[in-house]
Image (cartoon, rainbow, N blue to C red; front, side, top):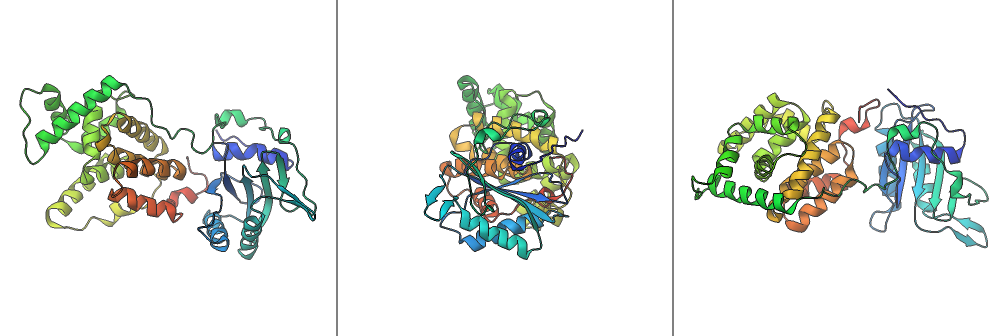
Length: 369
C-alpha cells in the first residue's frame, strides 16, 4: 500500500523530507524531483566543498534530477551544522551561492522550483526570501502517516555499521576460511581429518546453488556457511557471480559462473548482459532479494578474518549502491580500502560512486525500493 504524505507549507514539507529520504540528513544537500505536485523520493548529496567547482556541482545535481522520468520541478533542502551569518545587509544562509547556482541550472533545464530551504542548528529558512528570517525548528514535525514509513531518526550513515560478531564464532569462521585456502588453494595441504573444512568444501560443490541457498537460509547463517561464503567472495570470479546472481536469479548465476571460468581459462569475453547488470543497467533487481543478500554479506564481513574482509565489504558496497544507498556503499568501500588500498573492485566502485553514477533503475518512478 502506498502512503501519501501532504504538506501545506514549508515547515510541513521539511517534516516530509526525512520520510522520503529514509533518514534525517546531516551535512547534506537533498534534491527532490517532482512530477507535477508529487515527489516519490529524495536524492542526497554531500555538501559542496572546495574540490569540485560550484558550477560543476550544481550542473551534476540537476542532471541527476532530470534523469528521473517525468521530472518537471525540483525542491532543494540543505542540512548543515553551519550557522547563518548576520551581516549589515541581512541574514546570509550557508551555501547560498551553491544553491543559487543550482537553481539557475534548474531554470535553464526548464524545471520549476518547488522549495529551496535551509536547516541549521538555530532554525530553518527559505533561500528565496527577500529578507531571510530564521524560523524555529519546532515548526518541523512529521506529518500524519510518516511513522508508517519507519524510523528516520538516524542520519544517512545509520545502519551502515557491520553487525556485532561473536568472538567465538569469528574464530570458527577464520579457522574454516584458512582451511579452505589450504584445501582448495594451489598447495592443497589440508588434512582429511578436518571435518568442518571437508563440510565447507562439500557446500562449494555447486557454487551457484550455494549462493542461492544463503538467501534462503536462516538469519544469521551458521559459521560453516558463513566461512564458505567469505571464501567465495574472496575469489573474483565467484564474487562477481554472486553479484550477478543476487541481482537476477539462479539461472543467471550459472551463466555468469560459466562465463567467468571461460574468461579465466581462455580470455573469452563476458556476455554483455552480465556486464550490464554490474553497471546497473537493465531490469531492476528484486529489492527484497538484494536486501537479504546485503544482510547476509554484512554478517559475513563482520565475522571474516581481517585479511578476508575486502571481498565481502566490496560486495556489500555494490548491493548498497544497487539499492540506492550510495552513502552506505562509500562507507563499505572505505573499510575495504583500509585493509587493501589496491583492491581493484573497490577502486572501480569508488570511481563510479564518486562520479555520481547510479543504477538506471534508481531513476525509475514507482520502483519498489
